[in-house]
Image (cartoon, rainbow over all chains, first blue to last red; front, side):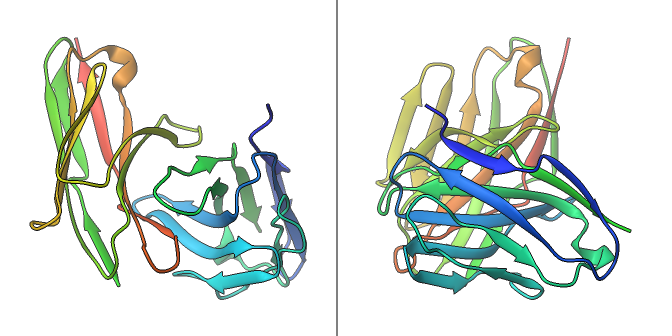
Length: 112
Length: 110
């Protein structure tokens, strides 16, 4: 059982480049989300989705886009990377309701 | 909105008991969750409370008081491997989102 799979694990981008962080889950979870984690800031919610075709903004959405075309996949797109987006990114999924979230292994992104 | 507070750092001795507190203010509550995160790894789920009271899972227990917006995680018989960051999170009733505190870094010393 793979759970939540994120790719890539590490990435270095130049300022202005674009890229997509991939997230897939095989647990048939309706809820999927993206967080960034910076030292001293905890996990901050970027975007989330409660089902295919439904997305919404979290606490820090600027500079990021998402889409949810299938239940399984929830990619995060950086259209024009900035050094301020250097961070560790986590994808998480859960069933809707009173249940816990499961996390992917994270993507460490450096923008130079 | 959400406002989740927990201490930044704590130190405890191997074999002892430690209590990590979390206070929260939220518009729409659907559970209080505790996660453990070792350095360089993903958070892993420990415990959650929806109703007031104590939930026990082996060496870990979690308590919730919804009227006070307060929870704690109790770790008993501390082991060196318990050195990690402990994250308090609140799940929203309306949008199902999870909001996290900044985490408490626990160091267990011999």
